[in-house]
Length: 131
Image (cartoon, rainbow, N blue to C red):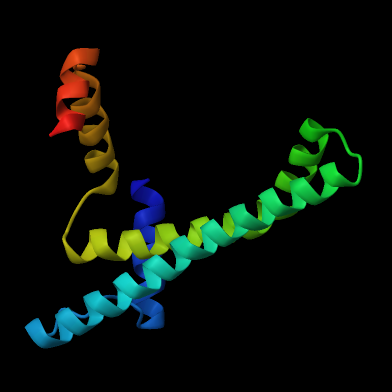
């Protein structure tokens, strides 16, 4: 992860696509723009998922067995969804660069945090849902 983050950081600097750190106003504007662009990429992932599910449904309606239709539809969108995932990761790396974060370490820390959380029992979860 560190390697790809460094590659993306260098690429973004070469293209002039980094989040501005000039001053608070320029940083704010740049952060908001990049947030909008990130959410657009995430929406494009959702669009590819919708396209896949619609395509699987269409094939099923034409008589293709459900599992086969699902697999064929998945294959149809795989390349495009990969591009949208890559775009999303690039924007996330921009934010990590701006905030001087080590994404790899942050991911490991988050996984450890989740792993070490105590799991509430069913009664505790139900109480939380009622609140």
